[in-house]
Image (tube, rainbow, N blue to C red):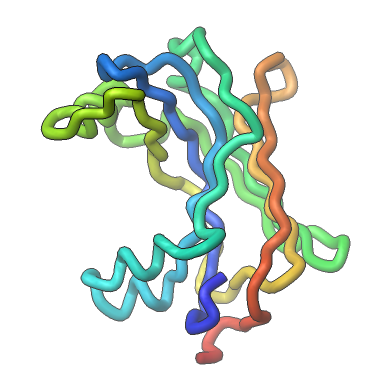
Length: 168
């Protein structure tokens, strides 16, 4: 977490793996952490709220192939604090407003990626203003479901100073 932010939240996302030709060839899990109070102060501060050490985790691996199934996967978030569940949420990739192909097309429209790219698709789960990550929280993001053999879970412990909503 940023030391100068009082409202930090995970953003669980499907990350699509795109080859150098702009074709979606696989997926993984992404936790695109955001410092919401910095982001909310001024739209120009978005880079500061999203890009800092530890602000984005990807993995634990990449599943290649079967990209049709990406249209309707479960994305689940669970945050534990001191061994207890502090927040849970769930959404589906079918709720993403633009198609995954359209997102990939926009990324490759004016940029070249000779080795391909990984694109985070955005989040549908954001804890409210009454919740902020704190040092030691464990964030687990799962994409897939119980009947899906390619289910992946990204789990990270939160590092950074302890904060509470409203403190600055």
